[in-house]
Length: 115
Image (cartoon, rainbow, N blue to C red; front, side, top):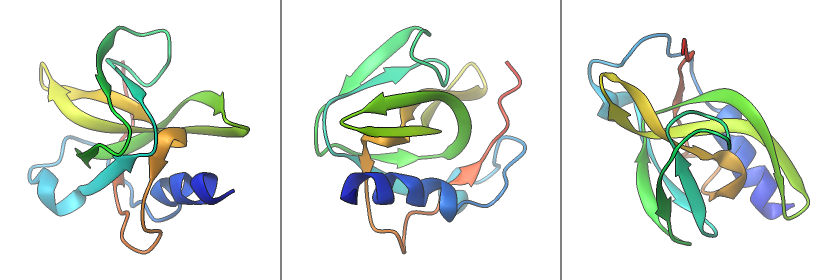
């Protein structure tokens, strides 16, 4: 339950973000994985795997959006966090089901992915 609550904090405290932020640092927050997680080009598990982040890896989360629901370790979450930009669009997505963090400080803006 602890991991789910922390992962859901990404969505619960987020503010809408409809376009690429001009100053990502102001809208971004550090996020930390609690186990190994695949990094995807798009917010779904079938898109190209760009990288793998190890457990307890801290990275800048630029924004979030709803995507494919991921179920693991008994929890389900459909929030994905972008950790980078590729070709002028948000990319390097990780499922929030694998994130931990402080529910009071995890503030990552939402972006709508337009494909």
